[in-house]
Length: 325
Image (tube, rainbow, N blue to C red; front, side, top):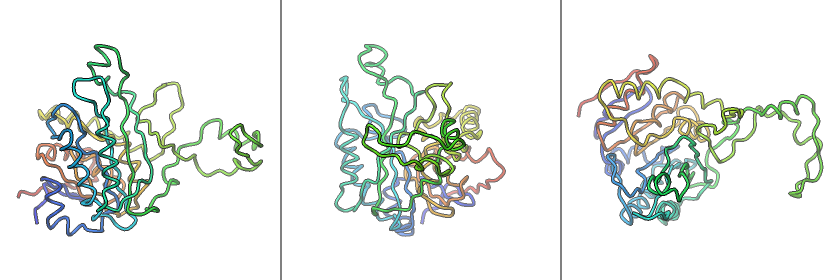
């Protein structure tokens, strides 16, 4: 079996084609053992990117075919979480349906046996205006500032616990818990609120399925789960700064640390195994290691694998062991 490019105490990073590796001895070894597949595959973009991306029907057929491969790796209560960006019709100010058709085809693949547990939206208000031609030049479209995240599983009840990713209560809710006073009764929505419905302190409020990577209003109270503190480590700055120092061009489509840490905490427990088959700069592996989960990452381009080791250079907690194939 192929040796990894490097390994840490909890994980291994492989370089190669993920479909080929997962169809080989590695895939057989991982069958029914992965608790979470968390990945952001190449998006169906009109323009060819250095990290590799198919287009049109070729992309859709390739993406749908991944469903069976991934499903075979999952534990009975495991999850697949895929982040997918929007796509546009080439040279037209018209949004394509390719990304939606690809996701629908993936979850409906008859050989995979998957269900859609929930859709999430990841909003990044700092994203550069795109598509530039229609947004900043001709000014006829709005900035495309979100990605879709589909959470899928072979089970209707996969392992999950939203109590692990609670948001801190708002100031208003903290005040209510202290005063124990609020307006109970029938709401315009026809929901009836009991006089004790909101008096229990659950340690925080349940996250919505819209995840804000950065807050839009700086004056607004920023309420994100405590696990998002992973994103506030110096890992991002370290990664970018060392890439610059060593003359590397950073991976252009890195998954936000906030996103990876959220789903790892929500859908796994310590020592569970997490897989990212399109690892790039290894955001998934880094967050999994920080959160005491085992991990496997696969990336087609060795240069991104070499870059990804930078993520583990910000802490003496990590012991990276290199291999040569």
